[in-house]
Length: 372
RNA sequence: GGAGGGAUAGCGAAGUGGUCAAACGCGGCAGACUGUAAAUCUGUUCCUUCGGGUUCUAUGGUUCAAAUCCAUAUCCCUCCA
Image 1 (cartoon, rainbow, N blue to C red):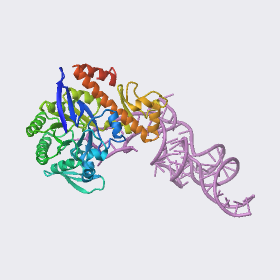
Image 2 (image 1 turned 180 degrees about the vertical axis):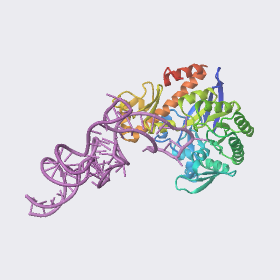
Image 3 (image 1 turned 60 degrees about the horizontal axis):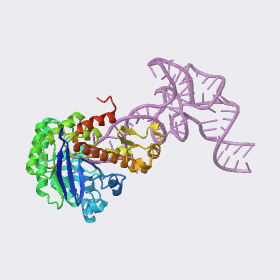
Image 4 (image 1 turned 90 degrees about the horizontal axis):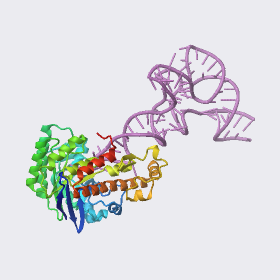
């Protein structure tokens, strides 16, 4: 069972320091959660996930429902046993797939009709079904089934979508019986403050165990994203987890921690890794670039990850160029460790009430002196 | 010794008179990626002062026009002796 305790709020901002306890394990927030859509953080073993000091990982209802099937996972004894991970697991509801598979969707009051991406079968995912699947999967944190609205979207569309998302949240909560599971509601509302406020307040009335902020990282500019987050956290209770869904650009993490977000997830560290990119204190680098061919230094001298302790840029570049999977694995380890370490630094800054100074220094390092 | 087939950009390979600086793939160079239909996708890849210039093994020829037709040379492959 995941339990959250707010430890402090930073003196000058809304940044929060918190503690999650889970089966005798303790994790601090703000935290970054690596994504393991198909019950695996792509290329990493559970031991490696722990070695980079990641805590919660995220898996996906839609994908596991289709393959291998939530009943199979249940038979295996739940996700933790099935994938051999004893840390906390959060499952997304399938709501994002409504958005990303938009060409083949049909949203009705009942739920969303899909043509699945594996064999084209027609499927119906409903709020009740999503909760049931997540109960079968046996994740620790369950998401309500929502509609992730794209950007831009008209006020009228967002309004009716938010209202439906709220009805879906209620329906899901009504059937939720998860043992040792907690359930989050998802704040939508696009860029419109009154709709974000309305959505948040209605969800809070339903008393969820935590709250997600959705509808971000769908192509909006950074300023808009930060506003969406402000308009959401402002109306959420202090004592519950706030989870910003899908955001993982380092600067966005820093900015949104300042706006009161506790946990983040993003596919970017693992996807960037598979595409040959490494996150570093001094910005993102592309190891495919010719200039790294004979660079026999680690990705980052100050990084304590397995890749940086043992391998050079030139070697990892070679692996990526040769399409050897070990390269993607080393970069995934590094990129996740980079984000987890970023969170460690942010927590330290919150403890010292110096997060604004930290942000300024972060920007100078990451983007160089002439940023903005 | 005889008979046939071939040589196209870094590599492989289309093209067989004009619409060809030459399809496509690989390789190279760069870019994108945000609750993962993503180990994917996009751009670019003879030279250029952006006007143009020089290409399809080499040389010569036919033609208004040649990677494409003809002759010779060089190299490679297959089959028969």
